[in-house]
Length: 143
Image (cartoon, rainbow, N blue to C red; front, side):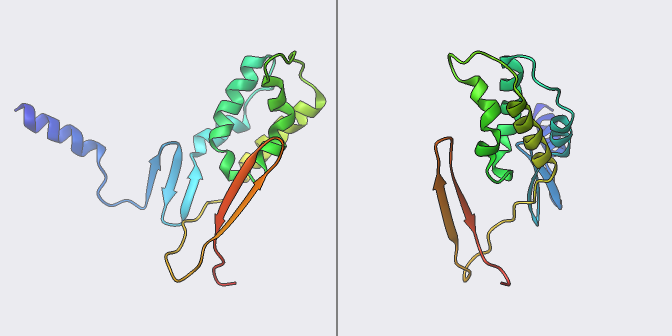
């Protein structure tokens, strides 16, 4: 009886055929990967930070999806600068502009597509700056 119950619990969690799954905070479909819609809504309605803990909480969430935003670290730098050790917290207009820009970018995130297998070649672009480094793996498909 115990073995049957364990099997039934496992099958409730399993999907055999599905066109969309949720996986580690993302929606994965045949066309690519996107953030979960409820996480995007949480970011959309996030309150303006009043203390260092608020800034850290926001960038803990948004940082997980930073790969969806081109130039994320550069855009976010004025407000993430407030999290540096020894920096006195003061919510400035520059920090607020960065906060609003990151929120807006998160509402416009693209679907990140999967790479095609061969014969298409892959292109690796890398960049580093004072505030961040990054890389993008891409392909040219149909021009």
